Image (cartoon, rainbow, N blue to C red; front, side, top):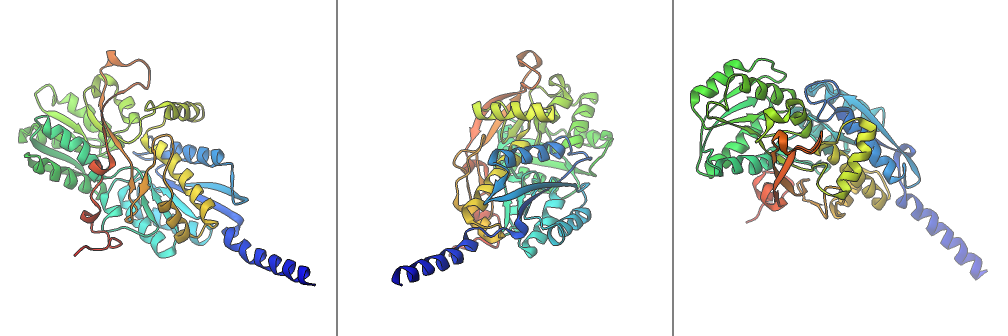
Length: 404
């Protein structure tokens, strides 16, 4: 009788504990890749971000806690209203558990508010505004890859110290460009330089001629390109046509990925100093992953694609460790677990959601220095996380306890 009682009690305890160990909503873990599939950032993110996320799911084993993992994707068209509508539908109707990529700062900030209110994880792998983990931070939002502060701390500081002590900015006229100009200008002035002016330019702009003339007229030593993707490529090409570099001014690429360099060609891009967050030729692991990615996608991955892979992998590890896909429980595990993927070694996440990971200062090779189609960078220096990432108490994140 006593044995039967103990046996029944053990069974009850086991059954009671089982849901706590494995609570997966709808019996599926859904990852939504909300990205630019057709616009000026599509080469840098786009289908490559979807491919990298699917590879993470496959490498994890395709299931978590015995439940299927699904990846869905949508094109936000670089519009905050469209991205907001997609995010709400994904959460309310399609039961998406985590949204990733958000490759546009206005999109990232809009979706951050929705996922905060609806208790869903948001992993920003591709939008740059440092406000994401600053005044707009969220307990379920993660700034995974880079931000405007890290870009400025790398390229802005390095170029100013190399003698580029007067700047004029060509700035994408939305949240990303404004934040990048602001953060870079702060490093320029802190390093003893001056900002002589700036031009605000709509995204997807095709004609930079009037803005380049203003930059040339400023006589600044450095023209800071606070833009990205197609806008960055067009501005560099047109700067070459105007003889900007030949006349003695220098271009500072504040955000560029290897797909931008490939589009420009080494002849046009040689000598550019760039802050990078994960080069395909960084180590044996990045080379092995990049070979598999190349076979599937047709190009090498840039640092955003490498981050998409690492972010999805870490999220799934956290779901496994938490025993649930409930957002706050998973967020806690994401912050508890160390991050290890081909690029990031023993990375970790602060209370404001910022991932602490190293960056690299690189220089674009001359054509004769390149040994192959994707051999673009010389690594100048590793930038430790504590040097490139904004101090915790400087971001105005409401989640961070004020000292004193």
